[in-house]
Image (cartoon, rainbow, N blue to C red; front, side):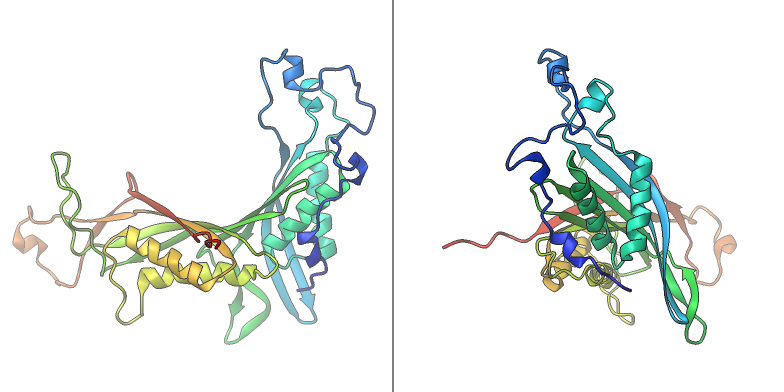
Length: 340
C-alpha cells in the first residue's frame, strides 16, 4: 500500500508559535484577569490533575485498489487531546477547543491523504497532525483497533473478496506530548486457545484452605491478551512484530503438531512466549501478557450405574466454566545494559 508520511512519526512538534521555551498561551484573547485554572478558581484548594477529550470509535474501511488486485484494512480509531489551557473547564471558554467532530473528520482526511500502512504509523500521523496544527494542544493520543479481515481463498487468493477471521484483534495506542518523543504501545486481545492434553498443575500449596486436587492431566484453555512497547521505532517492523507475538504465543502453547509441548503451569507457558518475543524482536523493550483460565471440568459420572454410562471409551465430556477463573499475568522487560 502507498505510504508517503513515514518521516512524520519521528518529527518534533513545532513550538515556534508559543515562543522559544515559553508557555503556551491562549491565541484568541482569553482574559488575563480571569481565573483560568482550577487552583486559581478555588483559591489553591483544588487542582485539575488530569483532563482531556476526544472522539471515540471512528470506524473506517481503507481499500487500496491496484488494478484488479484490491487490499482492505478496517479500523476503529479513537482520538484524545489534552489542551494546555483549563479555560474550557473553568470559565466555559471554548475558543481553543478542537471539536470532537473535527477530530473525526481529521481521521478520515488523513486516511484518504496518506493511506494506512500499519495502525501504529497511522496513529503517529494523527497525533503529529494535532500537535503541529494546534499550538494549544499539549498532548495527543490515538487508539486504533484493526478488524481481522483475510483474503478469501477460492482455490487461489481472491482479487477482491475477503473473509472475517477473528483469531485475535490487533490494537495500538500512540501518544505524544509536546517536546517529547512519540510513544507506541501495540497489543492483541481475544486470542482464545484450547488444548486437550499435555497440561498439568501439581505440587502447589496444600493447606486448610485448599480443596483443589493435583491435576496431572487437564484441558488448558485461555484467552490471551498482550501488550508491548518499542525502544527503536525507526527500525521497527510493526506488522512483523505483531505476527511474531501471535506466533510465539501459539507455538509455546501448542508445540509441534504431532507431539505438542508439555505445560506444567500457565505461568510457565506465558513466560516462554514472552521470552521468545524478546529474543526474536529486538525493537520490543517489554511485553506483558495476561492468561485467564477458561476451565473445562470433568463430569463425574461415577454416581450413575455402570450399565447406564457404559459406551465408547473414547468419549470424554467436560463442563465449561467461565467464572470464576484464575488470572495469570507477567511482564518481561530487557534489563538495562551496565555502563562501565
